Length: 267
Length: 267
Image 1 (cartoon, chains in turn green, blue):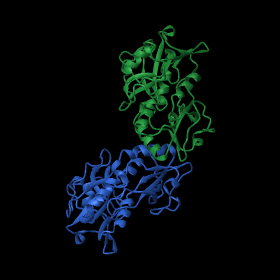
Image 2: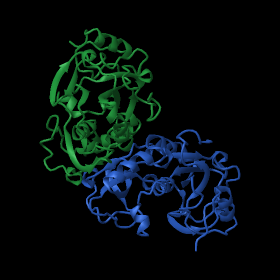
Image 3: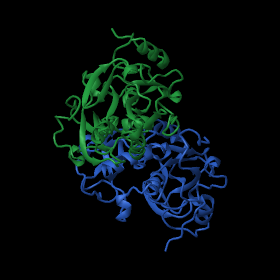
Image 4: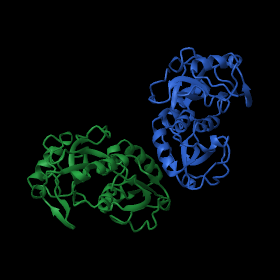
């Protein structure tokens, strides 16, 4: 049976002490969790530009100063290098997974970007008694590469990736309204209805995640997804890039509702 | 060329002086306009209950005291019996249209209900550069009788009537978010997508208004409509009922955005 930790600070402390090694979904309810992207300073300005150009897939929760492991606006005590259960380190052409601590990999030129994710808005849907079908089915959300291009910045470019959740039409309307209130968790959807209109050719076989769960009469709803910046980073090809292990997010002290873009960056 | 009057008070004064006899759409921008329903006191409590039971089709802007022609919360100077360009009077089994002044028909037991309409939210869509296709085509909005029953109150009952506007999927998402901010103008839609799911059998031939205007790739979006209470009144069959002539609304001093249900009733 999984423990639920209510306080983001307490959860980060447990993760730091290696006493919590589960996915962070459902933990520290009501607070924003973030995708982590760590890049060398030489790439930081262009990546910051990419996030600013594409706020729906890349809502910026915070940016560190070069070499610094803290972002005070996201949590007084927060330590980027220890407060995520598992990291992925891409360096020198190889990839190391499920790294528990970044201290050995840390460099003075690393800049950390924290980008909002959809966990907190899925929590709002569930609180509003709107069924989130992939969660009920115990699956990962399906994610698709679209034919919509992001606005590039320097070497960062690539397609918009979307996640899909299907609802009855009445619930889809409520999900649109509720998600719009969380611009830092990707905000309102980018598309509803026919997948082919955004270049999705094989709806049943998403590029990432699990196959979709759709009930009769459902309408598919598509949100911008945090995989978008990961694809852009791969396209830019920096000598080092560090991300979180999917599902193991950075938990922040920023309330999910009422926060807005631009208030939390400490760069 | 049509004059545009910015102030609701000035517009009401012109209407009262019989110097303005046009539809009120596009006038007094940013202020709520209302459907008018005037009923004898014997029916008023049940109709009030009908509106409370069905806030999406019947968002109450204001209710008068019996016999009184003013509703101060909607406008200090407002006179229900003179401030609408044209009225319809249903009495003794007959119907008189385009009545300019209700003074001769007024009774001490009449109660006036002012119910929000969609004009102010269509104005928001246009300000947001979202094409409203029936307006661009110079048509009336299409309206459909659905298979969704309203929650009855005394003799007032009947189906939910909806209006339809079609948009590109991206604009539909924005229209949903924008209309949700105006609960007194019918709020967020009640349905999107397949018309058959809410019992609409002949999409091209709406029960009221003009045939739909739909562009390739559009998704239809359905809002609760002010024709709903009119059908419920017909079903209740009071000895007298007075409404506005369609398109000629009561213009109020209530700002369209930021107002919410329950703040403006003076009953």
